[in-house]
Amino acid sequence: MKDNNLLIIIPAFNEGRNLQAVLDVLRQSDLPDEIFLVDDGSQDNTFALMQSAAMSDARMKVFHHAKNRGKGQSIFTAWEAASGTVILLLDADLHELNPGHIRALLAPVLERKADMTLGLFHGGHPQTDFSSQGAPFLTGQRALRADVMKHVSREAALGYGFEIALTVAANGRGYRIQKVPMFGVWHPPSELHRGIWYGIKWRARMYAQILRALFVSMQERHSWARTFFSSSPK
Image 1 (cartoon, rainbow, N blue to C red):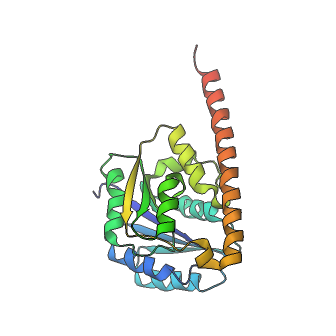
Image 2 (image 1 turned 30 degrees about the vertical axis):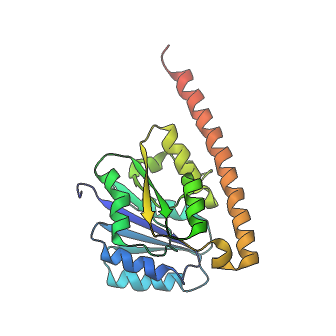
């Protein structure tokens, strides 16, 4: 399974309460060659936790945005500095994650049975189970061939539009996608994680960015298709 150079990317914004558990699991995994941690302008101790973790694990490298730029840009910041052929994307607020989940997400890609996997929560928390399985294209837990990233629309990927933009890009280019259950894993709903009113506001903004991403991605995909077929030999 180690014919590829493997990079794990963890984007985070104000995840000081949750990040340490994810970092501990990453230390236990022998699969990643590099682990890129991106602090997206956090106002809590997220950046300090990342710096501390990097001091004890040579595979870890920390990136810092002075201002919040969004999840999509955080992932692009890491990818642009990467040399890996396979990328694993994980959210920073996962609960009950273990090295077995990491291996399960990666296996289909490393074994060339899929080009991208979608990690879906199962049996962790009812609310996150429902949203994960009902809308698998929104999951932030993915393993993928690094070249898939070249086709992701930067415009569509702004904010929380990244997962939609990535899914549309992979589907449009014919990449093979496989769903992988992540038994017992969950993350706090926005209302629990950030407080009721702020969580509702956060969720509304997130869904607005997701809808925007879908619209922009489909527009760009149709434009690419028209250009391709009009320039193809008759």
